[in-house]
Picture 1 (cartoon, helix red, strand yellow):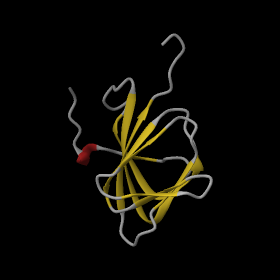
Picture 2 (cartoon, helix red, strand yellow; picture 1 turned 180 degrees about the vertical axis):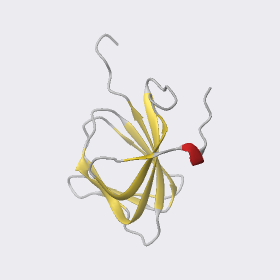
Picture 3 (cartoon, one colour; picture 1 turned 60 degrees about the vertical axis):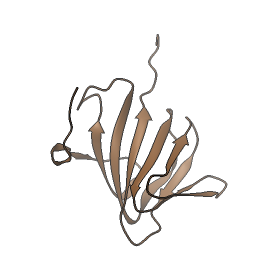
Picture 4 (tube, helix red, strand yellow; picture 1 turned 90 degrees about the vertical axis):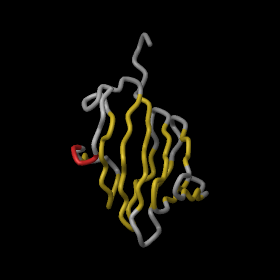
Length: 117
């Protein structure tokens, strides 16, 4: 087991994100997780992530504030505290905080599968 205290977590740059701070809570390099990682993202008003996809499945879990996830066909999915969203591999989305208060969201994502696994 490995406990993580928020005071010890370091921010990292998340490519394609803007007006947000990403914190790596559980990761291969920090706690040794082998199949998934967990991050905490803090989005300022107007903050988000560019349209993009991932090769692995993800779950978004909103802790506070409101996050809007926009699909390529402009469908909007609003996530409020305690709402979560599963995103399959390869599915594109855009993230935006349209509110005037910061939002916090957990991101749980699988690592890419390696050959032979």
